[in-house]
Image (tube, rainbow, N blue to C red; front, side, top):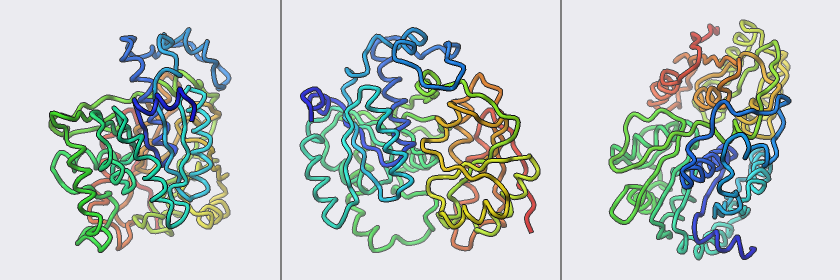
Length: 392
């Protein structure tokens, strides 16, 4: 690690496990740098190249006024707790390149590379954690992150968006509940949950503001229940808009995939039928796959629907902002119905969301699934609502 990186580690340490978390960490760093210099948010009317390419640092500074603090002086060491999924790893590699271009130090950890990997990872990060003044995390539900939180003495904790899970995290923190992902089936905790319960409880306490510790949530999600003492900062995707786009628009519609089948919430057959009906009704030609969707499902979807399946190499917010992208983007309830309107503000792209019919849910779906998915749709701003499509 370079001398500059070592000193940065004393200041802010960020942990991410997915491309979206890394994107939102970059958004937080951009917003934090602007706040630190009193520059305010970058203007939404900034001049951006018309070809959808990435702008040079000079161009960005000229348009947004964000050049008062050079990215290399932001003092952030970004730790990627790498998963094993090839698609996620590929997107994380690309996002790590963007983070380095922004001047951040990136430390790649093979955190799941075998039975001894967690011990090596935690042991290697412990000195940095003890020295860090601020810790930024993308997934407070992660057992890895919860374990790392028990080590840190940081006086500032920041949670950046991990998609719709942020909504559930904030609600659980406000109600003092144990941290459980929304799609986990209700009922008694399993043996592993019970074994990890003391660590999870400790993490929840540390994520509760106190005289010794501040907590910030940086989110583009709607937050109704703000936990006492927690600072909520809006993520309006200013970094994404200042660096990419505006996109070239195509005539057709694009459809955004979801991993609700893979997480056991939605029946696979019903999902394929719904995609086919939605594509036919709106003239969709491309299907942007979620990074967790299985190859088998995607192959069948391409054959049966005729859609061109695209596996993005970056989070969809960046893909859409770079373009080309359809004038209409169709989505089921997911994070993108909240983030894409922000990333695409000022363009002519229309985002439309289709509800999940309760009949599509599997018998193993969490009792909270339908209410949560309806909440994701119902709280979305600047989108068009579509009724759930009829499937037999």
